[in-house]
Image (tube, rainbow, N blue to C red; front, top):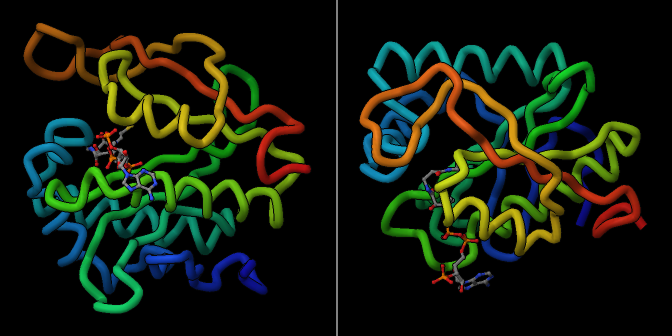
Length: 188
Ligand SMILES: CC(C)(COP(=O)(O)OP(=O)(O)OC[C@H]1O[C@@H](n2cnc3c(N)ncnc32)[C@H](O)[C@@H]1OP(=O)(O)O)[C@@H](O)C(=O)NCCC(=O)NCCS
């Protein structure tokens, strides 16, 4: 069922998706201590988590869109985070869809479920803005989610991130860019 307003929580088959706010700092800190999440999206210090959460709360307030925190809808257990961020790539305004799931919760389709909810949200509240996703070229698990969602590979961009076989963060790491076809799922 579609939420009535942009900032309403979203219910999926298994998840409750809630706009991230300052009350979620402790749970985001737990999520970002997970080794896989830390590897691909970090490194995170407690201060950085707090700054990121404050920034996300502001995005919801200013942009009317942002990332959700994901809980199991029946147990309330923290599953991960994900959703949309407004950004400009090149000179194009887009909505970026992303996801991170607790290490022990991967392999269950939760990231795909979050991504599907984000595509539905975009189709309802922001149908004129293209939806894209990107990740380091060697993040196979995240690329697989993009494919499961029916996104189409559309190029490579460079930004700060990881490079296969070279430790640390690199200023111009290659990221694969995927995008939703205009007539694709959720936009019919
Ligand atoms: C990227 C990430 C979210 C992918 O998680 P994931 O669990 O592999 O992806 P999904 O939630 O879509 O689950 C897909 C897996 O669940 C299985 N699955 C089980 N039930 C499923 C269902 N109902 N629907 C879809 N897939 C299901 C699939 O077969 C697949 O397993 P496989 O990888 O063995 O083929 C996770 O690896 C992660 O959090 N990584 C760290 C953070 C990160 O890299 N984020 C992206 C930064 S750009």
